[in-house]
Image (cartoon, rainbow, N blue to C red; front, side, top):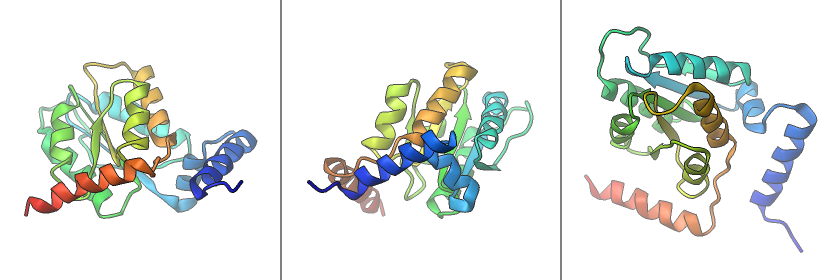
Length: 181
């Protein structure tokens, strides 16, 4: 019996985590394998700052797209900034935080090549990566606390793309994007 390439990757990732104590995704990012872009509006800035520190402590390179203060700002500006970095291949993934996570998700999904997902628990985080190949995570700072947000981020980043039957569905999503013209 032969293992698929994805099965081998999962086994190697798990072995690296067990040996090194650092998630394989974090190790790859720390070694230049990709950075994580973060952004937030005024309602999400405090949680964004905590998540950026959490990501840095786990070995990720973090690109902060703002905002940095509590003055009212518009979430589409920050969702777009993060999404453009992801779509342009400048970062491996993006995380955007606003009050509910909904508006940022909608805005990020307008950028071609982005598959943003609003996640509010570990199941949605894992599903969005494994089934939908999400490359931008949005969170609602008014709906989840810091501890859960960190767990969601970790689960989201550590969950590999499932491919196989899901690839056909993601291809259909991307085909809809091309129809928009």
